[in-house]
Image (cartoon, helix red, strand yellow):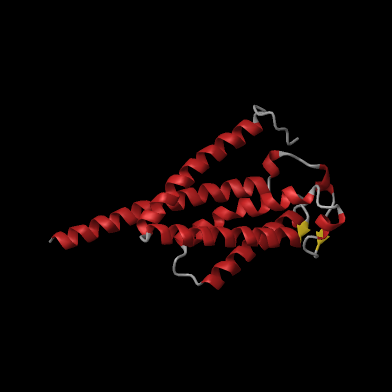
Length: 185
């Protein structure tokens, strides 16, 4: 009888962790949409024209790397959580399937930005977003190896993700309300 109850407790714990992870993932996807598609509610001057860059890192090379490097880093960083969440939630998918998922997510954002004139279609963005997803997936693999238990590693990720999500929401709200020394307008 104790084996059954122990199994039920583990299963209930896994279900609770999965629910929290899925909720955090949904919030992350909403924030990602708001940042990438709605540009934090700001209309930028470049939105009036449609541009296509099919050569990765072309703008970085042509501008001596000054403006483009920070954008590249941000594109990588913003997709790291996608890799972590994919590792946690899509355990049964192959590594190649997850890479294709990252590529398709990035391609979708680029096509939507181009279609709605809210950004350029940029091969550099696809490459860096894909890299961020892979880095996140590798980070998940390291965390899973450290904890050697999927429930404990997921719990750890949920604690970090909850903290990060709350900080991100606070930051974005403060940025939107002009309560920070940063100005994005």
